[in-house]
Length: 119
Image (cartoon, rainbow, N blue to C red; front, side, top):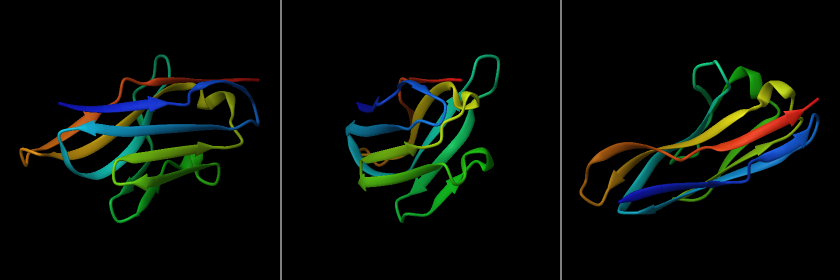
């Protein structure tokens, strides 16, 4: 069994900051790419940011310069969100491409954490 556990969502005023965290546990051999996606009501899920095991990062244009993704270790990732805007309101999902201890590559999702930015 593999789990991705997220924390850090909440309600914040525009211009404020939040930090999301996600940690993998269970039958994990290695984690290749970890990232964050978000889904706002009535919209498709979209990539926010991702980071490879080597530290390479990718950001959505809408968050460049405001959000920073980082990895504390092989199984834990953070998303620092600054200068938040009402348009950032969404459910944020952690995502990871994991090689399990059975040597199978599987794409896992966290349960999601709500981020609400008030104007």
